[in-house]
Length: 77
Picture 1 (cartoon, rainbow, N blue to C red):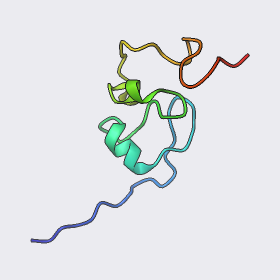
Picture 2: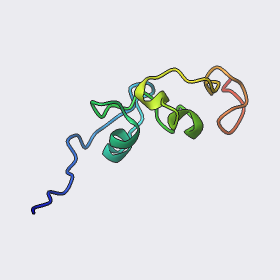
Picture 3: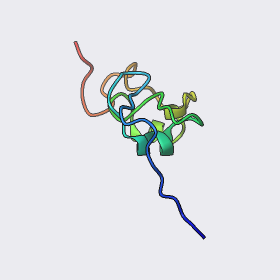
C-alpha cells in the first residue's frame, strides 16, 4: 500500500471575512468542503469557529464584531 502525504493546494489562503492569512491546514480542518475559511481566529472566537462559523454557518454564540467586549477586549472606537 502506498500512502501519499497531504500536500497544500494553495499556500496563500486567506479568510473570506477579514482577509487575514490562514494556513491550508486551518482551511482543511475548519473550512467548507472547498477548503475555504469564511471566518478565522483573527475575526472570530474559537467557540464560534468550532461550531461552524468558519464554514459560513450561523451559530448561536454572539459575533465578536457586533457584541462589545468579546474576543479579548473592548470594541474599536
